Image (cartoon, rainbow, N blue to C red; front, side, top):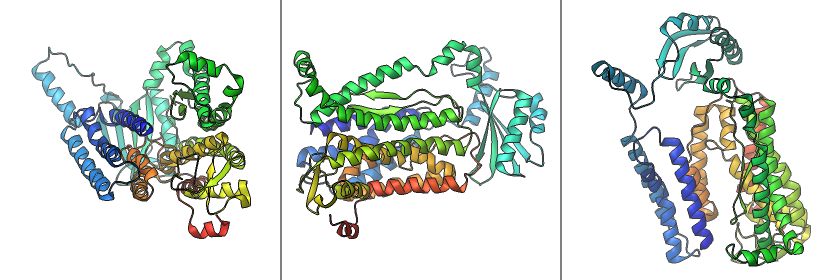
Length: 506
């Protein structure tokens, strides 16, 4: 029950941060109210669990109806407090300034990106044989150029980008997107990053990577994951507040080393995952931080690792390569660790307590890939009535599979969301993300282990940030790679079919 409460707390915190980041600036409805509406299904599920325990699952109608009602209520509250569109705001502010010229606006001043006298220069940047401009829309922080594409998207973007840089230098970032009508358009936005770099000393610019901070978090996470690894290995640790007793236990090297297999295995998987993102971003000359681990003295010992990219992604090709590099690198690191860990795991009897997230009695048939790897590692020892008491390294490898699957979910700003965005474009990626969320929700009605996961994804924003050239499509090689990545997701999360289980004799 303590684990359930902790998970609910972490879910609430993550949901609040997502709501605050995604909608706080576009609606006047209080963030706490939107957050509370989103948390109602999880609170209902928690209340049911407290009353009836985990053995009696909640009625599917209760969960589905609460999700439907809360989604509808969330949309109503969001629309009720939605801010006035930018154009209307601009007009209202202009009228107010004419009637009361002495009053200073309290909001952030509106900047016109381009002067009216520069419109001719802007039009000259769009040759009629490349992109025939039919309409120019001026917004407070952008200029939108709509027209007709006359050549290949990649050629058009590159040529017009060169023309814009020749006329305006680095004042603007040029974004190439596809509208709802399927027609591509260009957007010029002020290049605030270039302005900051001009005013920032070179020494401060070089501090982006912060190797000292990355090393400190690495060491802290090694300590917290080692503590968790010791508990997985069967070491009984005193509470954290009993510092003297805890120090006495940790002063024994033999006891301490029992936690290292899990700690090093999990950190290797997470670290290689983020290094895949980092090195690929560097190959595209995108400014990014080093991988930062997040240490916690409970749960898994860490909430994972992350990098921050401080430069826009140039095109869908770069978006695809950077996004897929992390999960694939992490999966490649996971495979040998998981196979070795499974080979050194103990086989126990299959009981009612055998669940997906129980490392002491794990049913390998909960996952197609896990079942195949278990059979490969254990051979004839694994039977239809067998469960696995996982070795600490196998626990780390199993968590590596979960991390890979979670990141490959084709939703929003997850790696999988970036991948389908790069493959099919923003509009189709939104549809795919919505379908994926619904399918996972349906799967959670059969497999309750996925319910919290489904709830988190249900409220994750579907819209992904566009690349600068968000129109040029990928080549066939990358499309095939993306489909294989989605196939990997499927074999991780789907249970082993009975026909295949009979063939493998498990």
